[in-house]
Length: 114
View 1 (tube, rainbow, N blue to C red):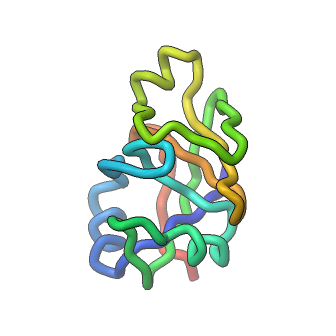
View 2: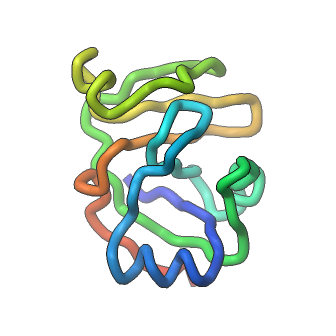
């Protein structure tokens, strides 16, 4: 699935060079968060570790998706999710759909948007 992630220019350059790394915290725990459109990334990049200015376009292999609705588990981890039989999470905290993966191996390709 084609998804989008916004970060700073410096962090974007590092991601393009070395790939995504899961964050330390977030609405669904320490994962890699994606929005469904470039425009939506501006509403999503609002957490304490979030940065803005550079949008990445990624092809993400979601596998079996756990639907979380508007609520998510801040203590979720990749191991926990795998134990539940899922590979990724889909949720909508009220400002649009988001997808979360917990390993960079789910990200098939990354490019700068535009």
